[in-house]
Structures are given as C-alpha cells and as structure tokens.
Length: 512
Image 1 (cartoon, rainbow, N blue to C red):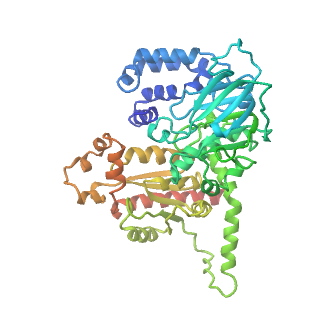
Image 2 (cartoon, helix red, strand yellow; image 1 turned 30 degrees about the horizontal axis):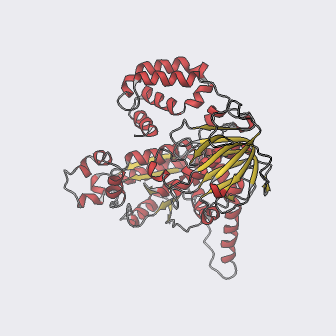
Image 3 (spheres, one colour; image 1 turned 45 degrees about the vertical axis):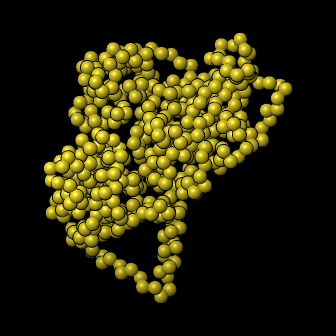
C-alpha cells in the first residue's frame, strides 16, 4: 500500500501520531527546511508511533535512520527564483542538473544554463564549460558529464501506467566548439516539461494528475513560462484551451512533433503534486490554495460563460416565449444539480429523487456530462448551483466548479467505494470549502443484493474484496453496481442540504 493511502487510513482511524509520521516522511523535503521548529515534535511522535508503523511502513531503526538523513542532509539545489517546492534542489549553480526523486508521487528535475531540446533522441541537453577534471557526478559517454532519466508524469508509484510514459534523457555535456549547437528557437522564459500520456479521457486524472500539478509547478512564473509537452494531444489542449492561457502566455510545444532545437536558460522537467485534487498552501511559494486554483478557473471560464449566456438570450428574442418572471415576494429556490449516470452506478430511481428534491423546495437540474461536453458549459451549470448530487466516480471531480463556502456536495457512496469516495472527493471537497455530505448506501440500495447471497462477503465485507486488488473492486463494485436510493433515508440529507443553503442565503442577505 502506498504511503498516501496509509496516511489516510491512519488518520481516518484516529491514529493521528502514526499518520503524522507518514505525512512527514512523504513530505520530508518541506520539513528539512523547517527542522529547528519541529525536530522535538517529530522525535516525540517517532517514539510513540514507530512500533505501530513497523509492520506497515518501515522499521523503527530505519525510521530513525531516514529521519536523521533528511534532517541532516545539506543540498546545493536550485536558485531562489526556481524554488518550486523542491527542497532537495533549492538552489543550483549555472550549468547544473538536479533531480528530486524523494516523493512517491513524482520525480522532478531542474536544469539551469545553456539548455537545448533534441526530440529525435528524446533528450534535453545542458551544455557546460566544465572540464573533465571538474567535480562532476560521472563521465558517462565521452563528453557527457551527467545523465538523468525521467518519466515526467505524476503517478510514479503506479508501475503499469508509468510503463506507458515516454522517458526523457536529461544530459549535461561539455560544450564542443567543433559541433554546431545552434538554436532554432530562443526562449527568454523558463520551460516546464511534462507528459500528457497516461490516463487520458478521464476528467479526474486530467485535473488531478495534470492541470492541478501544472498549476502548482508553474504558478510562481506568473504565466511567463513555456510548456513543453511529451505525448501531446491536440484534443486535450483544445479541451483545456480556456485554462492554459492563465498558466502560460505562450503556445505549448509538441516535444515529439517539433524537431526544432528550442533553447532555454531554465527548465523544470516533471510536475509537483500535493494530494488528491488539492493545493497545499504550506508547500506553495506564495501560499496559494485550492481556492486560488478555483478562482483561476473562474477567470478562465468567465468570458466563455458570458458568451454562452448572450447566445441563449439571443435565441429567446423576437417572438420566442419568455421564461415567466418570479413574483416579487417569491423567494428564489436553491438550485440542485444531479450529475446523472447511465449504466454502472446509475441511480435507477432518479425520477423519484427529482420529485422528492422539488417537494423540499429545490429547483432541480439534471446534468449528464459526456466526454464531448464543453467544460465551460459544465462550469456554468455548477458555478450557479447551490448543491450537487452524484454517485462516486470521475465526474465528481466537477465539485471543483462549485462555489466555496456556500455550496453543498452530496456524494452517493456505493458498496465497496468508501475509502476512494472519501479520499478522492470527500476530503478534497472540504479543503475547497464545500459543505460535504457523504451518503453510504445500505446493502438493500445496491443492485448487488440481487446477484449475491445475503451472507456473501461482497455484501457483508467489501473491504476483504478490495484487498484482493483493484481488478476486483473495478469488476464488482464499479462496473456491475447500480443504486436504488431509499428516499426515506436520503431525504434527510436533502433536508440537511436545504437548511444549510437557506441559512447561508439569509446570512448573505443580512451582510448585504
């Protein structure tokens, strides 16, 4: 089990001290910078929980050794203007390559100096004036001074998907005056190099593994950065065309498709990722949070939404039937969006759910996002909503489009998905400032009750099936399960959401 899963399990289980040590270990670079203030706390935590973690994480003696290492190691690293949450490379000299491989989610490498791309060999060269007797790590092949390999994708621990990611060579070489190292394109801003391979077409992975890490890594440059993309997909660039200009003022470069030599003076290869669908302000140079990222989304989609609204108004002009106006003394109904599914994990009694919500007082909109649905249209729908209901799945990523501090997110949690629902969407939604309500269905609300005996572990002990591996979880709980809500139970969540929204609206009116 990877470290972030262990951390969440320990934290949710109430073992805060053990969870703290796992968190510190996986973020040891950050704590290295702040060791004077937290050393005594860590030692106390280590003594109290080292033996608890021993069977699951690392031995107590190993823990002592590793903590000693990350509190005592000194690094030259990168210069301050390239300090992008990389404590192992916090300041590097000109003509150097430094790679931080300490995090279990991703590797990230930094280069500074005469940097030139060479896509035919999947390489980025850094030319140096160092001599062979300089203190360099190794002389690999003739005039090579250093050779690093990296797969710039943020699921480092997942070996199966990482096997599909193109590998990039980062090579430091001595400058040879007899060889033509001319530049086809000279850039006066840094490069951020990353892959858009891996899990494609899945909105969760596109935001969690790509867009948010890209924000984390590039935000410090204030759009003065060029994105160099491995495994470039036109459709993906088009899909996020509203967002990318708010991260970079320059057109992205298709590394594999552009054989020209692009020259930079600074480059970051790989992306930083903090946690599931979030931005940790402690690890950001200017303390940005996931709310700041969401504000960027608002700026990105606002012009397109304005255009969509104007277009809709034009369609209702002339002799078209206008929408009846609300009476002056008639309060506005809270808007509830149901993210609808078809097939697996669909709510089979959705029509009854809609009627129940309307009876409580909601104005209900049913939204069924398709792979081709424009994100701005989804954003417009959810940004104007007060509440969202959806069954656990990738589409829950759209909670990022809801307004912090005044919106409710109700996630329906099918059998066997408790941990994933909380880790990937529940906790991140709280960090965004949403009112999160998780609804764990009972056995009788699952279609699996019709397939398995009432005493079968599939129904009585889903965790035992999940422990057998992802394929069991996927095949049984994700692909073969639908939900028929018990509206008597679920109505309580709807009432809680309605009361919360009503209270928020009253508070807003008083402040106004």
